[in-house]
Image (cartoon, rainbow, N blue to C red; front, side):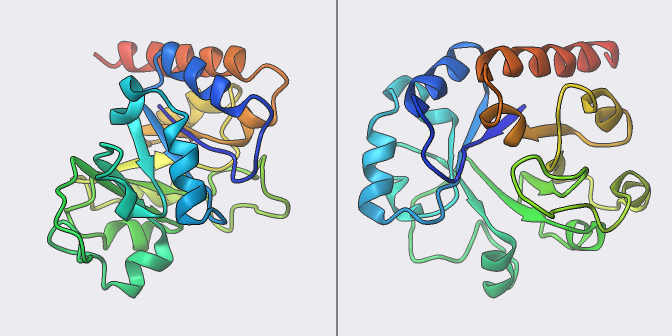
Length: 207
């Protein structure tokens, strides 16, 4: 299961992030599009060293090596501007990454990805919790029936909450990503644990 940071500052944000990791969060995406390199460095510096291997950077990728981060994410725009980033990504940095991911917004886009991407977000699955007027334009459950890319895991994003996780997993998504359901909740840790249990129960039922 993936949690994505709120793009804006949140009260006790670092404390909440640490608690999420302590509760078993495996992947935390830092998406702070307005952060300068210095602001991003200051933010990462507050996160305990023991959790750095579970962090994914959405921007300021050149900081990754300095902080021992080996996972990075590319937006759809970045990927398309760089011709789909083949060969473990074409960027002026030789540091090797354990994982690279990206964002997609249609099944056609997802199916056309190079195999170098370990996973990709496909969104929005439902009406967004964190973004106003961000609704699905197509039925992504139906769209997934025409999936041809099985080397890249497909992660559901957009409006995911405890009420629809089961349905999402049953309809072909490999995993889910949470944003609004965590950061817009009065008790983000309790909400995370609830969603985590639903995902784990589903995965165990498939074994």
